[in-house]
Image (cartoon, rainbow, N blue to C red; front, side):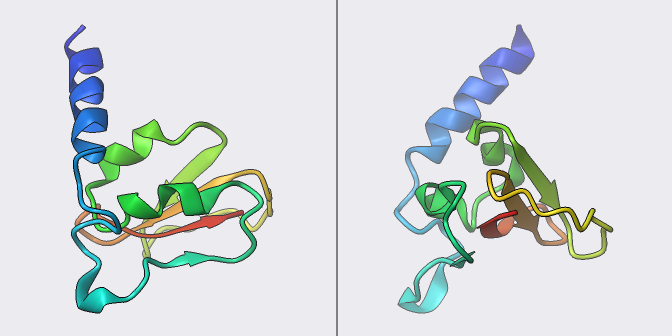
Length: 95
């Protein structure tokens, strides 16, 4: 029950952020790379936010940090969420 409340709260907070996320400095566009076969551009507003908000992205999805090994299989329907060392979303792409 508490987990459901935490997730619902995180989703609610995710919708309250400014477009482009708080980590989007300098006025540049958020980094959503590659062909948008999975709808990654719809989640560009999550860039700069804590990884917990990525729970709102439907499956198939995966998240990874720069120091983690990921499989090389390409799934054009999967949303790949790149995190930094502090679990902040830095990029969202398909694959």
